[in-house]
Image (cartoon, rainbow, N blue to C red; front, side):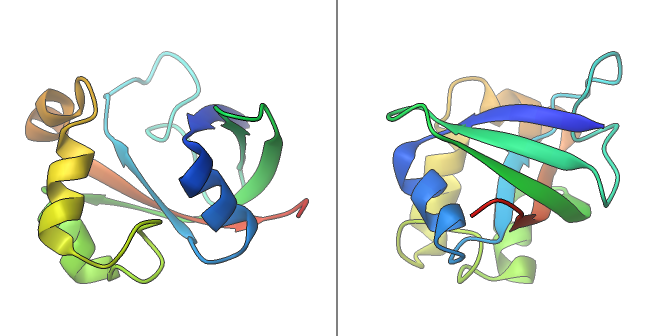
Length: 120
């Protein structure tokens, strides 16, 4: 199975450069379509840069579900999860400020998806 997801330009470049190896996504509890709920290690995700339209294929290496963004960042670390700095408080607020994410995370938790670019 493969997923298709959009990314902001900074996160896309960080994955492309190999600096960001864990993508953070709200659990939208979708089981009726391809999603991180139905993905397994070995599946692929195609990320599209929302600025340039470039795409990047990545293999899903591991998927973990965390109750909160803070717990995810404390457990996974910030080095490979963030594309902007290492400030956990700023990152928690940033992730939760994405439209709809706070509600999804509060209801269903948040994914840490370890990826590896396959076409960079």
